[in-house]
Every structure is written in structure tokens, then in C-alpha cells.
Length: 503
Image (cartoon, rainbow, N blue to C red; front, side, top):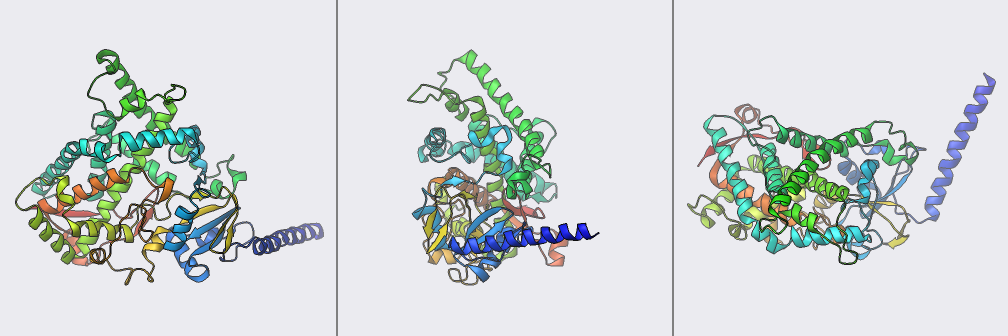
């Protein structure tokens, strides 16, 4: 008994000593202020289920611009103001352009092939970024594919009209997800992968795998806070991600093999090229080598997982806010009547004149950013920021949710007021740090131009062609559940269902 007490006392003294030494070391390192970490676990217990909200509350108490927290063994610096975000993403872009690698990115060595996780100094990253920017997201390429986006949105409208005629509720997020997925698959593979009717088959499996992957990747993982545990994978998250990637890669690989067989018959010089052809034809100017198969699989996996969730979550949040704010919906419909008139099909050229609709999307991004903490950056060198030292190897988070709810910048930040963007020139292209839902700098999301064209076209078409209302039971209770669920993106915890009535 005495021996057990002795060893217990020694352990407590050792842990306390390490803790106190760590606190003294933090002061000497001139880190930004932050909450006092507990021994071993640091500030992990403070995160909760919605860390963007928890970190915003902590920042208000400890460091509104920059704050230090300890997540397990990982020193993390959180930027929670527009000025601090400008420092991290613009002024010190080169020093902080690295990525903090989650344990799940090691599955199939994904981080060595992915444009999301590769170092910005990597030749492969530059090649992938160049081919995506030039061949998929460049304005002239987007213009060429405008009719394809129009076709997908018309399919969405026709499906909603059928649901309305049958008296069925519209699951807004799911239909937006399928529409975005089919747009991507048509652009990349020249084929739809999923049916809006939700029939069983390969398409349904593809959609379900993507949805589960986006949820699983967002789960808190002990391996990301204690690198010593990563090999054990104590929660089994890496194994789950590996299984999902295996299924997703198999389905993408089937499309690649199908295209290779078609090219063997028609020849590679076919004029009907899609983005997969561009990837297959790519040759590096220095050595003439193309992309490895695993690189193509990783790139397309990134496109499908990020491109579908972001667009569908945004459309769902917009529709929910408009249903809660009928005066805003009425004003949006009035603008559509004035700009589009009796024309049934909305064209992308109309969107530029829909200033209030654009303001609605910006206000939704402010309140419900798709990635409220963006993806974590990594400090490549020790850097002085706002009088503090960000140490080499620290993880950096930019809390765009906190920036969007900063009362110093946004009067009545909790209130949905699109009008604020009619009075204030702010865009979301990475130049105005008060609103950066897609990040900024060299790590800014390259797919945002495509996502924004699709989101605006979907919303304009749905609002122009239908009157929208809440189901009777929700209307009767007077409460629409606006709770959040954080996975890869910020989504509604309870999927939105609405009633559409053709105009």
C-alpha cells in the first residue's frame, strides 16, 4: 500500500512538474495569450461538438485577434479577427502555407497526391493547381460549360415540380447535393452518377460513400492530438476512412478504365474531351511524365467530397434563412421578377443583375460558412505576428465563423440581414478578410468560382419557379431547427424539408 502511494505521489509530482515547466516555457516563447491548459489533455475539453463556437467564446476572453490553445500535445494558434486572418493568410502566407496533416490523410498516402494537402512548394502541387485553374476553373472554361450547368439545374427544377404535383416535401439539401454531384461527374466523366429519384444502384452508393466520408473526416480523432497514438488508431477512424476511400477509388477507377477503353476505340484526339481526358493527357514540360493513377484518384476524390458538400450546404442554409425571413424571400422574388420577368429559364448572365440574391448568399456565408475553421495551416518557420511568436510546427486555425460574428465589424451579427451587403462592398474572393468562406492566399479553395456559379443558379431557379413554405407541423410549432452539425463542412443537423408550389 505504501509503495502504491509512493509511486502515485511521484507520478502526480512528475505530471505537475511537466505542466508547470510547460507554462514557463510558453511565457518564454512569447506565445499569444490563451486559456490555461490542463496537464496531458491541454484544452481539449473546451472544444465541444461545435469547436468554432467554443473557440470564439474563448477568444473573446483570452485573445480576440490571436489565441494559443493546447490540443493534446499540439500547440495551436487561432486567428479570430479579420486583421489576424490577414496576417496569417496574406502577410505571412509563405511561412504559414503548410498543412497540418490529419491522421486520415495518410490513408493510401493521400497527402502525397492531394492538391489539398501537398506542400505549396511541391512541383506536383503546382502542376495540379495549374491544370485545375487552367482547365476546369478558369472563366473561359466555366463559360464553355455554362449550358451543362443550365441542364442540371433544369433537371432539378423538373424534379421539384414533380414532387410538388405529388404533394411531397422537398429535401432541399439532398437534391442540391445530387445536382452538384452530377454537374461534377458530367464535367469530369461526361456522365451523371446519381439519379434525383434516389433509385438504388451505383449512383446511390457513390452518393452514400461521399456523405459518409465527409462526416467521418470531420470526426475528432485522438490520433490528431497525440501523434504517439496514431499507429494504434484507437478510435478506428483511419480504418473507416480507408474503407471509404477504397470504395470511392474503386468507383472512380471504373470510370477511368471505361474512358481508356473508349479512347482506345475513338482515339485520343476526340474533340469531345472532358476533364478526365485532360488529366490523362497531361505531360510535365520538364520530363514528359504524366500524373500517376493514385494522383488522379486523390484529386478527383477531393473534388467530389469538397465540391458537393459545400454547394449543397450553402443552398440548404440559404433556403432555411429565407423561410425564416419571408420579407427577404419576397424581396428576392421581386428582384427576380424585375430582372428575369416571365422568362422561365434563368441564365447565368442574369445572375450579375441579381444584387439582392448575391447579398443573400454573402449573408449566408457570414452566418454559416461552409468550413468555419477552414483547413488547418502549419507554421513552417517561427514567425512574429502582431507582437507574438508563432513557433515552427504550430497548427494555425482561422475561425471564419468568429470573424463573421464579430460585433465590431457586423452590427447585430446574429441577425440575418442581406441588406448589409448592399451598403458595403465586400466579396468572398479572398481580398476582404471580413468574409473569407473559401480562405485566401495560395491555399484558397480553387473550386470556389464553379461552386458560386452553381449555387446562385440553383437558388435563382428555385426561387423564380416556386413559392416556398414550411411543412404544416413546423409552421404550427413556429420553430425551424437551425442546429449545426460539423463534419467536413458545416451542415444543418436536421435536414431541411420544405413545400414547393409552382408559380
